[in-house]
Image (cartoon, rainbow, N blue to C red; front, side, top):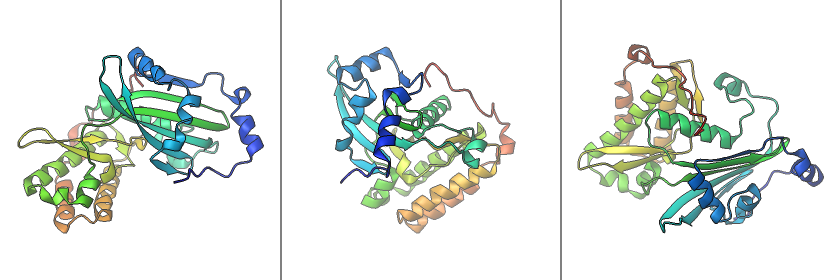
Length: 281
């Protein structure tokens, strides 16, 4: 599949992406010195080197691409990672939704990096952050690198390939309860997740009668002041189930589980917007 780029004037794009147009302090952040050594060892310590791999991307959209890497560390262990690229014109006129959610002028990469940090602090299972790199004032380009999650298939893939219905009913109920409880925890802390989807939930068996879930694609994590956003996120998840053609029993079970969640006002909310650890985020 050919990568589709935005229709841009070449001369302006070249000027904007040149060194003279870069901000004084481009963003380069590695999760740890060991992570930096690993990525530099594999030639992935700069945006130029990372974007040189763009043609190998398995997922491509206008201004976005994702590709998978297998990195072997000095200890011989193999690390599977995903690199999420984004590029194009930086939006200077903020959306009202971005103003309300505190995400004005934040790129997709920065939003996801910080969203992963929020979910980590809430005790949710998310991909480990490895690095984020970004540069460009008018025309920007970004790279976010994260580890893959342990479960092999998303809930969406399980529904589509029949693995979902092959599970006992009780297991399916436990997984949906995990989704509902994760949303409740997110919203009780004053956050929301507009990008929730069956494609972004990865179930994992944690014992003979227990299930956990891993959450990916956290660029849609944002602050919220309204308890109504919990119902919004629940509706989005139910729509994703319907889009995957989940059976009526599954959709009905999710609706029932969601209807049994306690009201946010009754939970005695914790600090509404826990601060992200800047040393990690």
